[in-house]
Length: 191
Image 1 (cartoon, rainbow, N blue to C red):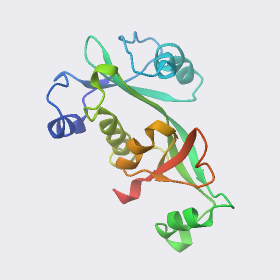
Image 2 (image 1 turned 90 degrees about the vertical axis):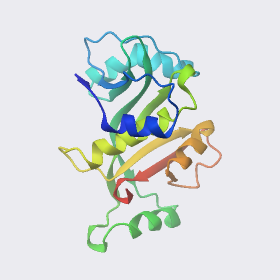
Image 3 (image 1 turned 180 degrees about the vertical axis):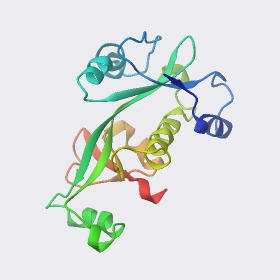
């Protein structure tokens, strides 16, 4: 199924005009032939080209791609998750709970995890990564859902932390400050 996305023209007008005009958002399907894709991260390239269909088939993640007729410009994958209270991190959890009415507060909240997110080399720095985050937010804010979802989450690689911070993701805990990845979240209700 090919679907044009309303945020594309808005985000492209903010950034660079060198992004192809015929870009479209496509949900990966099992029988689909994936146009070429090459990011700067070989693990992310391999996921799209070798694993994404298996994740779809196994009901583990759904992958969405920005494509033209000739190439895959970028992609991200989504799976269900939850934001769970960590007993050792009261300050971070208090910040989350302040945004939730008292009678609705819980030990965990429904979330969607951005499992993979990558942009092709020749399109890096053009705002497409931020566009993908906006697309993910739109999927859970403006489109009718079958289940509740309050947060977007990501286990962000250390070199991607500034990108997610720039896009208003917050750190869930300080306990992972020295790890290779850090858990970050975005509150969809804050939009």
